[in-house]
Image (cartoon, rainbow, N blue to C red; front, side, top):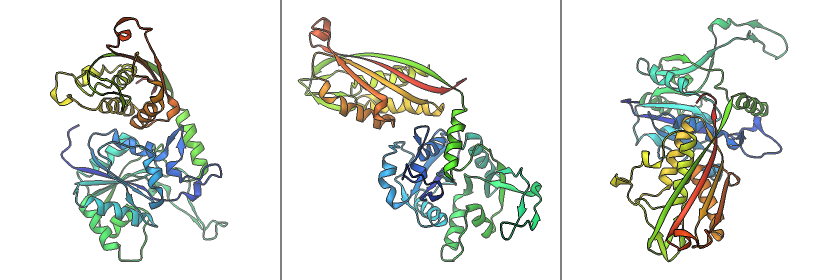
Length: 396
């Protein structure tokens, strides 16, 4: 998608989420799982699906450095996290200051606990900025709204036809909202969203179409709602496989699964010849019916010479995420006489889990020999096999 503007996203995730506290899980809500994927991971991945997003700045609590690192988010558009403050306003300002040297045209400010924002909502506010200084997604209020000063007696009713529920991402021309935050920072006022700050600075804010599915995780019951929401999405299971062979050549170690194993030879190949990652890439692409490693990374192209094969596997994972899919299981078999694979399987599984950003228990590695038969039996190379089981939304 061609887009001339440089677009940044600030993901506000510095809160403690006390209203969503759970005795069985002490993590802040943004790091807790919904259907085995952390809330914050889901949120950030929604923006990574769009090629027009250039920069993503996570704003986190200073005590959450390890929690954020454990998400294993590796896209080059994601900057190192910025530490937020005791209010949302302070946290957003920290993100805006970090963006100053990157000088984007537009900035989108989004709640880290809104993991179900979709492309239509995001593109709606971006497109609105072509004609406006600021835009927010919103949905019409459906329920009747009552006012009460004591929480017991109704004092009046509101005209719901004029009321809208605000959502995020809220979108702005970067310099405008940054200047507004700078002017507000020395004052004691505390605003709960950036549209209110824009209005305070006399910046007109327009409404864009929101989506009821773009709800915020706020309470413990919201987690149950999110689980039901995802459970209601019809998914289908697909399986792909991969097969690869590499010869040995003169060297001092082989690279398998992203780690180097000492050996009296190395594997011959255009890239780093990591045959384990090659077959996993092919298996995922196969499950997606999306070609193979040679189609996307032809050995005839010099830029892939010596390239780490993690590049190829990460590419396949991104293709999967852009179709809202997930890995269920990766099953890898390595066939060789030497080197011995068993002592290195845990390190390989750990490496692959980090590359794919999935749990260790979703990765299986087995090793066997060819009982001294054939080219493998003669110690001339290594063969690998892999199966990838994935889930995709039905109809993809």
